[in-house]
Image 1 (spheres, helix red, strand yellow):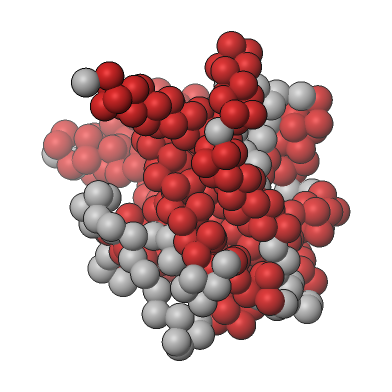
Image 2 (cartoon, rainbow over the protein chains, first blue to last red; image 1 turned 180 degrees about the horizontal axis):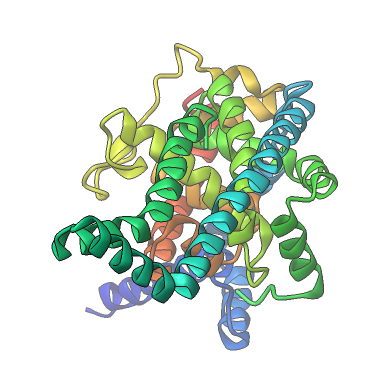
Length: 164
Length: 194
């Protein structure tokens, strides 16, 4: 009855040793675990061989050399510089669109009371219905937004074409 | 990830400015690691070369998204990985995982080594050949974490960030990947399966 229990305890020790060998490489070990493993490996040829095969596999992986394609880095550098140039050229244009739209809206807000008075005065002279006046005034406000939106929408296919 | 140093902050500033000199330096500095990672990920030399160039274009375009709080290489690998996944999605495959191991519990896929793939051709001498054969026998989901951890020496949380996975999943895959690698390397290096 004692022998199977002893075998089972021994198997547990090997299982624990294997777990710690793996843990050492994956997460690292705390000092007590490290001491236990070192002591076990000194007395267990089987686990020692497992630890060595693991080390050997990882060493082989770390030292494997892969030939780097000649000219790949310089091709990448060239493409990156070209793309940087494209982005640089586009930036001022986008900025100009937003700046013009912003200035238009600011001017629109600042001059809105005067423009409305102008609309009312012209409407009275020309006998235009009030609804048409209001629609006209609203359109006058929307024009900068429509222009800016149109320009930005026109940019999208160009960006897709250039790979952005 | 705790890589917030003056170096990474300066790097983030340079990327925001799209500094071409900095990008040239980064390409020089990380060329081998990035290409190696892409080659392990795609197992295809020409495709890895294409992704290599696309990755750097994306680094230029999205440089403002790098905040300098994590290691640059982790961010770089994330970009490279996302490009490969996007490409896989365009081919109607949902992710890298489903490409190789839909159940995530399936046994390792053994590559047919009788027909050398471009990854075979990319690696040279006999020892390297043996390592490459062994690696190709490991399913991609395990191979990727093994390469990131033991070859690129990323921390667990960095790998988790690159792969958009919880750290616990990364650990599970690493344990399985390590076991798989030990088995196939031992077989291959001792001539058992070569």
